[in-house]
Length: 319
Ligand SMILES: C[S@@+](CC[C@H](N)C(=O)[O-])C[C@H]1O[C@@H](n2cnc3c(N)ncnc32)[C@H](O)[C@@H]1O
Image 1: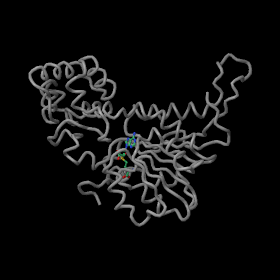
Image 2: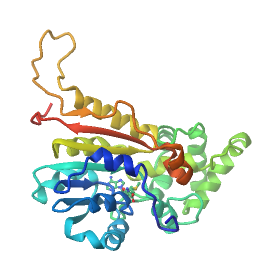
Image 3: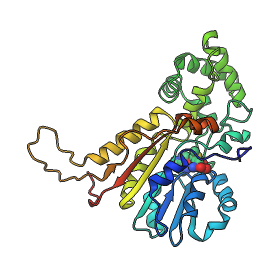
Image 4: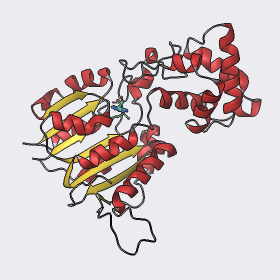
């Protein structure tokens, strides 16, 4: 089913295999979304439990319907996933046997025009996944300095014309605030040279991605989430993370590598004095990518990368 407000789960088989689900195990889906992955995990549990986290209230409400048949083994938690460690503690769970994080926004978030994520629909500039959060896209576009705007457009959007777009935004808002998504699209469009407007990609795609990442602090939450998740896993428990762009993937790769390294002594130390042991074993050296069939069926899968790490036996020791 791929209509309005549905979301096709990405790398579903690979995630289910990667999690190595035991029917009596405890699992966390840290990015519930429209419950595509959660449904398949829940189906495989008997006496086990699935903790589903999402910061978007709409995801939690939709899951009550989609997962109704399995609610005896599911706990829904509305929270940021960077609090995964506290969430487990509050639920009295000493360790989980697997965790999945499928990053980014869901198709329903993009499709729901009033959320302001899309450059295709006119809506107030919002882009908050968690509508309780204070910072909106409107705040960023209308109050951040040209330098800050340039930085996020360049770093988070990899936008070549970051400086020019930032200056245009600041100029446009001197007359009146930029209130809606399509007003912002117009400012961006009018800034780009003709050649850039002819590219296959929508001219506002990169800028919208950048602003969305800033609104939701999407990169800042990753390392705390990854460390909290690994700490919360039982030995042998699997951590599966799906990313959709290079910035996210770099953080996931580097953090997994750091957790797999163990010893943090300077390289010229003759013997280890820190005593740190590897906290994870990297299961797949190279990220797992979707096959051509999946990309044909679901173009959103095109840029997906799945990385998997397994918790070691060593006790967690802060480094
Ligand atoms: C790509 S979708 C997940 C789709 C889901 N796996 C499925 O198959 O339906 C990502 C979801 O994670 C949520 N999300 C993203 N970042 C989050 C964060 N930091 N904390 C909690 N939820 C987050 C979003 O609200 C969105 O619903």
